[in-house]
Amino acid sequence: MRSIDTVFPALSEPSVRRYLTGQVVSVLGAWTQSITLNLLLWQMTRDASLLGALNFLLYGPVLVLGPFVGSRIGPRNARRSVLVVLIGSIAIALALLALLAFDRLTPAVLLAAAGGLGVLTAMEMPGRQVLLTSSLTDRQLLNSAVAMNAMAYNVGRMTGPAIAALVFARVGPAGGFLCSAFALSFMAWCVRGIHPRQELAGKSAGGIRAAFAFARTQAFARLYLPVLVGLAIFAGSYQTLIPVLADHEFHQVSQYTGLFFSCAGGGSLCAAVLLSSRAAARLVARALRWAPLVCGAALGGVALATHPVPAGIGFWLLGLSLTFTATSINVGLQSRSPDELRGGIIGLYGTAFVGMVPIGHLIAGSLSERLGVRQTFGLNAMLLSTWIGWLLWRQSRSARRSAGESEQEATEEAKGRTERRMGR
Image 1: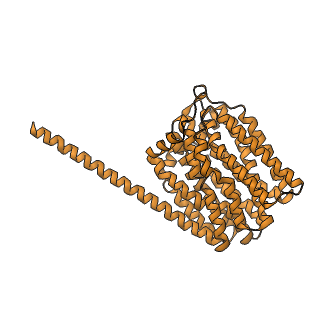
Image 2: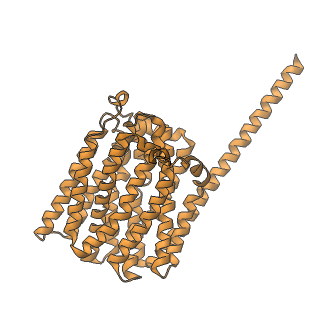
């Protein structure tokens, strides 16, 4: 029987195993806290627009801060930046717990906490990924390590919402805040034992200008960063709509919020497992162009579902296709970037995807108040499919034009060689 690190090559690295252990636990805690904040705010206000604002604050700072923060994080300071983020996040969780104990939690306090967590998230993503990739002793394992990081994230994403909904229903929000504080503390303990490989220990970040210049020269980045923007706005906003769908359409907000988030997390986990394996390269080459269109189909399926089971299947497919696309693009960008620019490139990825998701949250929350939650899912499906179709058409036209120019240049060069021979 093949060992697990033969199927998932990155697990042969001790630093990866340590990192992933902490990542699973910390992401579980972070999702538990995020869902707890959503459920608590919904319980207080029953306002979908405020849910959109909450999720905007949780992820919106990445839109502005992502490239700037990421471009300043290199192998030399990645570990320190991750520890700072973790300590700040623990402090917020404990502060929420204390305010809850003294009955001082209000919608404004929840929104302020979400804003603080959002600023820390802008630092977290590039810091964690630079820490992980710079600790690899074998650079050929980078693709597997990035995909396994996504897998760890989605293990927490799959189980965190279900745990949060259960804890919220049985214990109340205090349980969610305690879970978050414990999980983040465990991740901090794991991070203390991870160090960059020796030749990268003194390497600083390359700066934001170099990261932008590098991205402009890459055809992969020019196509897929706009794809990420569309996915973030039209597909990533499903998080805001799930509690509304569970309440308005299925009339059991805690039960179906946890179920639908878990379905989406399960699909995401399946995608991450596939991308972490040795078969990932062939899979990405065949499916990346069409996976974003599957996201549109999944959104449409949720819009049409009148029973929790087909809705759950729609969310599973949405999680699968969304994670497959986003993780494949992340791997593609990082594998093409040098070590000193990786933080900046991750920052650009964060702006295009994580940073644009909050805009989708705001739009989705507002539309669901005006049109209804099913209609919002359907509209997002149509707009996403149109956007992806246009981008693929534009890329195909550009490729044909480039091929035609190359053929014309080759023809003219051959004609010139023939004329020179005839002249001699």
